[in-house]
Image 1: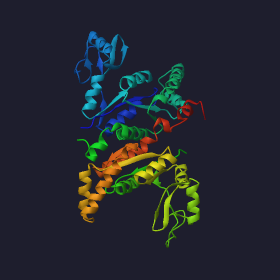
Image 2: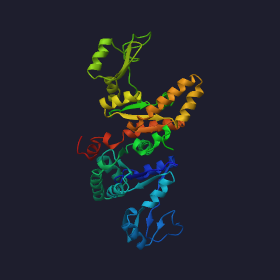
Image 3: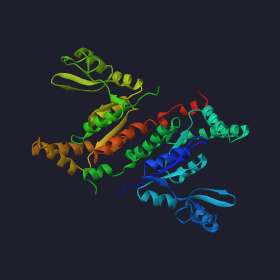
Image 4: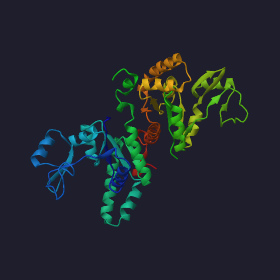
Length: 203
Length: 203
């Protein structure tokens, strides 16, 4: 079976990253999220290894030290993150692993997982992003300006990504990301040994 | 308007290149063949600039000398080839230009047109290719062996291509090539200035 790839998807808040990935997962069963790890207690109905990998704080810290955690963050006194093993398990099963992650985390993942493919989703323009954030009617004017400024800072990282997808029209953006997931696997440097196998020089 | 790209598609005989591209053009109007140039006389109904660019032998030779011909071949005493201008016209109109070309021609095009994207279509295996050629029932056993050997030689060039598409299932191969055409345009190095434009640093 052919291995999957790790795709890292980043976008400033308000660019529709979650919506795009939600639509994408409706259209393909060849990609999925890796199961996250956390040190918080399981809630009712949550199953270890399905909803999260539940770890003790010591276990989690130990895994960080051993370089087994691709990215993590601390929130309300608990660790949340992605184990390298969760990604490996998914891609060894032949599926693509998708990580939604902010820009600095993405740069770290590229270091630990150089074969990762990085996709950045951009708004058509910062003005349109600002309008979209304002249109939600849920945030203060100050918060909107702060978010637009943060988006601008995040955009400066986009030059380190492999693909740039503009979310102007949602269904076009979904097709764009699907095409990236499909085409990236066909790139020659991803297909080591294929030519030799077909030529019968290697089995 | 965004410029199109030049895609060069190569495959050994019997790999279904023409069928794949025929199906692909039914599914997208964003790509087309560049109009070829020839020194042969127009046949009834053939329109200059539509079916071919009809050139005199002197004109054609002059264009070769000036480096204006991406690839050409001589057949029955006439030149047939692709003018760089035909490709430029197509991609400036926003369409992708597709060139079907054998492996050595493709290597030359990459030199003259470094931004070209090269796609190689492979059979699932040389044995399957041989079976397919035999299944046609139109060729002698000697010719079939000769073609299989030639395919093997051509496969050695595949390592210089950007994408490798295996034609095992036709509709999957068509989707693969469509994805390549779509995703390649989203690659960061193809989108110079996009981030700056969106950030409002450049208009």
